[in-house]
Image 1: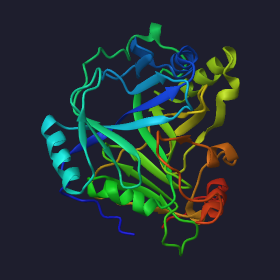
Image 2 (image 1 turned 120 degrees about the vertical axis):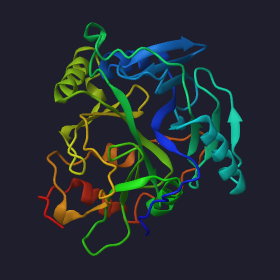
Image 3 (image 1 turned 90 degrees about the vertical axis):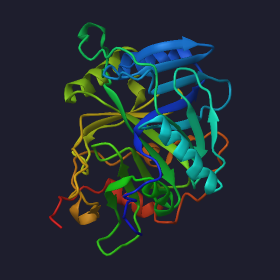
Length: 336
């Protein structure tokens, strides 16, 4: 596959910025996200709650909607630089037959809804009502005290096809991994717009389905604060994976499952990216490094469905077993 990013994208995307989930018990979900992850509730109305990290000035980075239906991911949100980018985005997707539409949503500026080439529902907005940053108000911070929204991860049968849509929009690839050194087909692709390795990540699996979203915490002590809090208030079983260290971006991490099974990661700050010399790094069995127990099968195979989006692909074949073996391997990294 080509790893080349479009140097002149049709509009400017700033970063992954928010996600919308449906939940069965809003009060229980709020307890988990505020007490364990440490997010702040900006507002709550009509069965919908809006949350943000303690460092964020945006009105929300997580929206939770009470629903009696199966819990789903309703949309992935991205911020663009300015209002003009929304108009440029509309023209771009309209010319490609993407059926874009502008919608009015509470607590964010004009918003564009589109669907990417594999069926993932997206939205773009330029502004949200500004809030006071509360990163220096230590007396109100709880659990992991999540600072800011960082990235999303999606499972897809063909990650090369999935990533092409985002490369055309100016995303760059920080890392990708294959099974063996001689292989050419990627099993996973990490893509970014802001100055760290990931805004959206794709892993090979039946899909598209929503694997997880992530918040940055200040340092490793906040990972353990979140874990201790989870254990003390009845969410001990929410821990799914970690604490451990990501090989590709060096960040320490913990994965939780919320009361509806949605997966959320908290992680220490990753490496900085974005300079011209930051070319895609290729990983395989012989040059991965990390320390952790092998990923549990739930992490490998379970995910949240997108609303009204059919899942394609199968549980075996298409390199899926190789991906499981790859993620479970822990050899020392060797220079390329």
